[in-house]
Image (cartoon, rainbow over all chains, first blue to last red; front, side, top):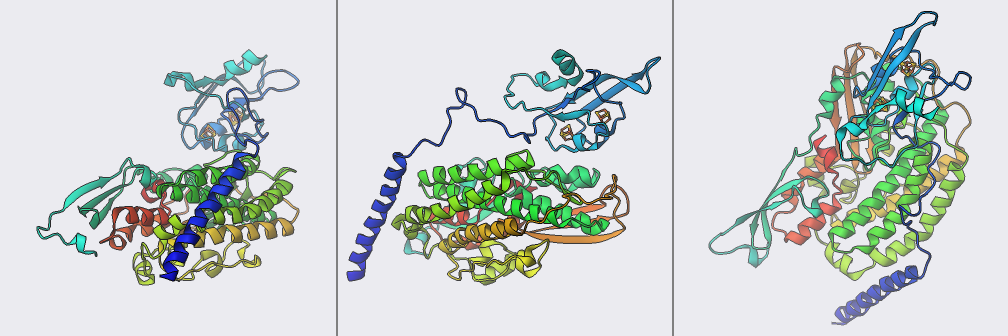
Length: 146
Length: 372
Ligand code: SF4
Ligand code: SF4
């Protein structure tokens, strides 16, 4: 009987302790961010979809069309094509398409590139209604940036 | 079984729990044969998100399977990374620099804490309490930020590489992690006051959901499930790998065999993981994070290799059979939750439905990992 009463009292007390914690946190600063109006800075390490980098000197891509990234990708997201041009050593990039619908952001392509021609973008606001919107033409994106 | 369970006419009905049900944490379906509120039989039905990870692994190169490992158990992805890279390193004879091993253990333990915090929130949610989830997510957010700053992603990490880790930590990581350890230690008493000592939680978990040590052995249950039944088994202690032998930590074991014991094991494990992280940060050596001379295309010697790691849910083992080519001949993944779930059918017989859901929550199921 005594135990029973004791349990009722300690049990009720435990509920008040929990309530006290909730009330204390209620008056503490807000920890969430109102997302579209406020954003948090991205870390420099964030891995978004891949992007071609620019050669600082020429302003062109550093890609030598070796196809290593295409081979390294586990999901076959990357299509690289190039052609021989007269007067230019090596191949010239004509197409670099990323199928972002299949990409798992693993980073194996970036690691395999011998010339550091690709890197991760910091885009995370990716929303769309059509699948085709995620087939990125990275070459065009690079040219648009220039 | 109570008197209610034995109705004269022996009338039972079938109740489908899931595959879309808030209490099953994913697409798990349990076919329950019910007698009123009591469970007569429970049969988990698996395979709703089977993605044939094993077969996928056999059709890609060794390195290309790396992103898959983070997508089996998305809550403790780094341990799965660890298991896979370790077995391939063993097979290919790759030495890992010390700093990389420390980083692996520190990040994997951080990930374990975040997994336990999420379990904590979701478990209380199963029992009908909403607010602890928000407290847990507040803390978990700090871990995700820390891990994002080193790994580049927030949930499905793919950070470990054969021979090391993907990149070195930045300057903020060590002070940030220390600050987080202090923060979580300060908040643990709050969690215990808010939740552990709560009378409703105690009434719902104490002496409910018995899983005996014998049942754990029979079904091969590992991790907090078997440690809550008095079996002292932790791969980090009993088959030590990586730098765990150098770490000083305890394995929390409770022998009450009830849902509460499993709850307490995980809450204590958070503290033990913090201890490991702290020691790792203290001892963190300088040096490279990637082994030199890792071949670009990995072709392990012919043979059969196995490596087990301790994940937040138990022992995860990877067995690879190599035929010397650039893809595995066979890749077998032993997932802990699969074994932990299989005892559910036997353990919940004759239980009230809400108690069985509490038992299921205390198993900490992650369905993608069961289905693989
Ligand atoms: S990040 Fe991974 S999945 Fe995405 S394109 Fe690169 S290699 Fe392919
Ligand atoms: S690996 Fe680099 S250089 Fe080679 S094709 Fe890909 S982006 Fe171009």
